[in-house]
Image 1 (cartoon, rainbow, N blue to C red):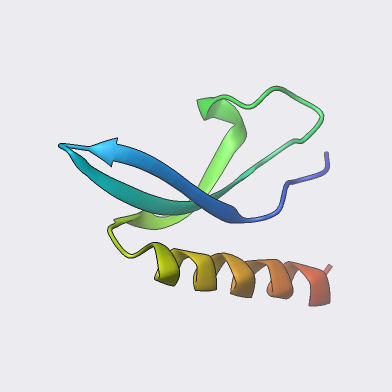
Image 2: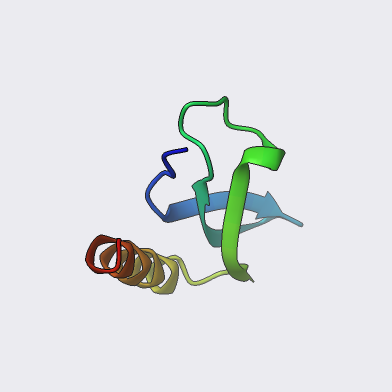
Length: 64
């Protein structure tokens, strides 16, 4: 079950673009809500989410 890389997902909520860090759990299966995992909650700060995704990807790379 190969997991995808952590990345930033965007979603317009109440007229504002919000961001969240997440990844696909199993890249061999279609992307849907049951095949996604998230780290943290929605935020307006896309840059912070990009940094978190980078850190999580590095952590996976060195602890795999």
